[in-house]
Length: 254
Image (cartoon, rainbow, N blue to C red; front, side, top):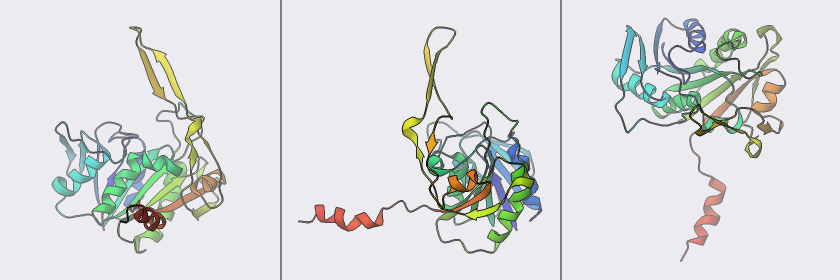
């Protein structure tokens, strides 16, 4: 089995070797192609207004001067001589829960894999305390990652679908298990923007990662993490609100 690994935290991120160790439990044919720099929040964006550069570190390890989507596209079209059987994205430093997935470069890299017809899984390690930098504990992801991935290897994935996995902010021994759950939703009306001034007196604004409230609806990824479980959520790329099609079409009927 051939595995492609990528992320949005960058080629030197601490979660990348964690994911490589997880992948090695399933295969020796592992390729890495990740952004050269951190691209958190890049979503499913492409670099269109400047050239993208590819750097090779060894036979199967590369970085791309662009987004996670750029990295997957370069891996599939320029780097690899045959497509992978599995794409793993992560392990992200921080949660990708609820509607945060729409911003997530980690999830978007898996989306690009799904668009290419590759079985794709995004993995993220939740942590509670801000300002930890690279000191995020990845123990839960390291131990529970193989337990999550193994059942998915033989599971059929519907076309244009992917799996989003989040590990709770607990020591591995305290994780209660795995729950398959739906996507939850945050209350972004309570999010924060931190304002300040640079040394030259100009104002700047920094989007805060705290004070975003959420409702722990039953059966959601948010609830599973809060209860101490690994959350596993199947996602689809069809964003059509199918139940609205008929009523909307009637408004345009002659």
